[in-house]
Image (tube, rainbow, N blue to C red; front, side):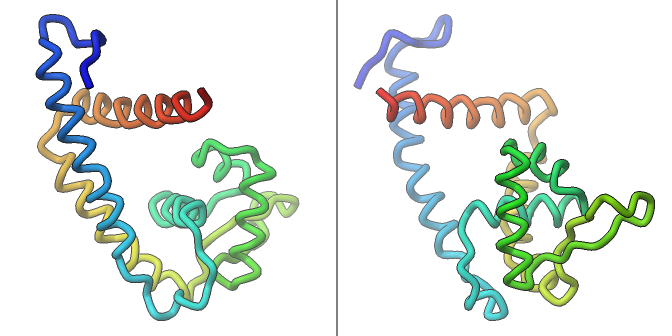
Length: 160
């Protein structure tokens, strides 16, 4: 599978070698992520990847409003609200009144669920920190931008 879309000064073989390595690596990474056991306290809940992203945001950034969550997750506020509603009904999240503006609701991980969720998501965060720590800020940005470009390209390929 050769392509003419190469970086300046790089041959098609180098690009194909990188593509080949990533085609082998990505399924292994996904497979390992899927094997991370769900904590016993959370096994009865129908959690999906979309829920994990939301929970990770709340763990890393602390309690926030639905609109703030939507912005971080890059989804519409209605989508974030639906996810929050699902997790709230499961007892995983709690909504409370904002002390400074009683019209607003603050979303947080329920205190009784926080230890399990933290234990579940912390190893992945620690692994990313170890992998990214040796990189410069510019290199980290390039890495994240490359993954975002890959995600967009996969979507484009699927849409035809």
